[in-house]
View 1 (cartoon, rainbow, N blue to C red):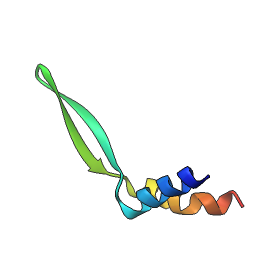
View 2: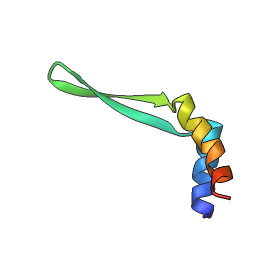
View 3: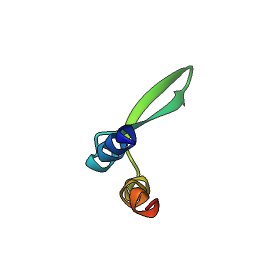
Length: 51
């Protein structure tokens, strides 16, 4: 439970990035992006629903 809370806290604080891989000609490039807004909102609302 503590691990889940710390993970949700990191998502809400914007510390978690999503890695996306794009194929560019003959190689792959990785780009780190912020979490989408809907995922941040779900992280905030998630613990409330489970009560």
